[in-house]
Image 1 (cartoon, helix red, strand yellow):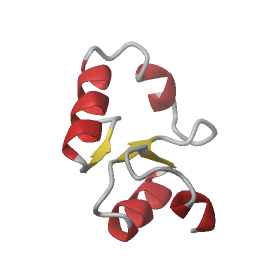
Image 2 (cartoon, rainbow, N blue to C red):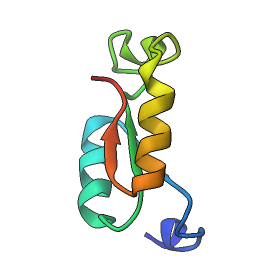
Image 3 (spheres, helix red, strand yellow):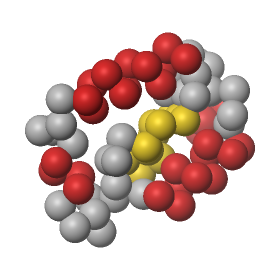
Image 4 (cartoon, rainbow, N blue to C red):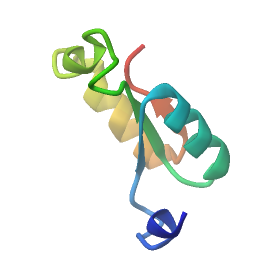
Length: 73
């Protein structure tokens, strides 16, 4: 909590893994929270983010609108 509260509020928060993302989205609903699969347990979904043309759009939209977005859909 101290780390997140120590950075500017306009910075997005990254939740690495579904459980971390869900917790952060709940705790910090006034900030942009970006969720990505954990690289060690994503069964290839983490690498697919680089190839997905919608990933950049989802990221920019979530940051502008200050809402939670799971990038691997």
